[in-house]
Structure formats: structure tokens, C-alpha cells
Amino acid sequence: MDKTAMKLWYDPEADFLEVIFDQGVGVAEDTEDERVEVRVDGQGNVLSFHILGLKSAEGPPFEVELRLKKKAHPEHG
Image 1 (spheres, rainbow, N blue to C red):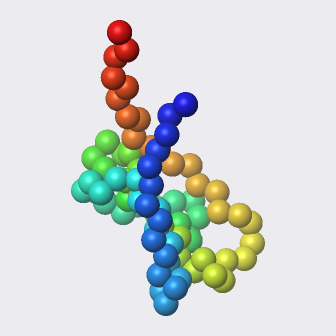
Image 2: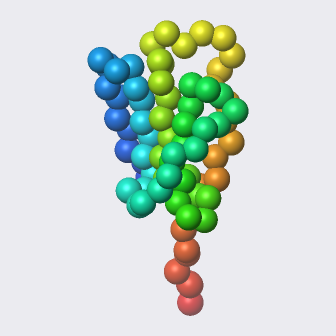
């Protein structure tokens, strides 16, 4: 089973939740859900995403497809 480490950060004053997979350089992109924005690297892999207005979120659950970077597995031998 592959595992992905992540860091979570929540700012209660800004009502902003960020989930960070990698600290690499990236650019922000909008998603289908206006409450969610992703940061991607040059290959389009998701480095992090954030959700705005988490406390006041109403309506359908957050649902966004993410392209996570696959980690190389060392050869077993």
C-alpha cells in the first residue's frame, strides 16, 4: 500500500484549511469547487490544496479530483 505524508494547517481567523503534500514550487489553480484551490508543480502534480470558508461550508460535500505525485519505490532484490 502506498502512503502519502501530509501536513495540515488551519487558520481559524481566516477560516482557511491547507493540506500540504510537498513544499515544492508550484502555481495555484482553481478547481470545480469555488471553495477549493490547488497548488501544482510543473508536471501538474498536486503539492497542496486549501479550502476557504470551512466553518460556514454548506451544501454538498467537498469533492475534487487530485493528481498526487507518485513516489519511486526502491527495487527489492
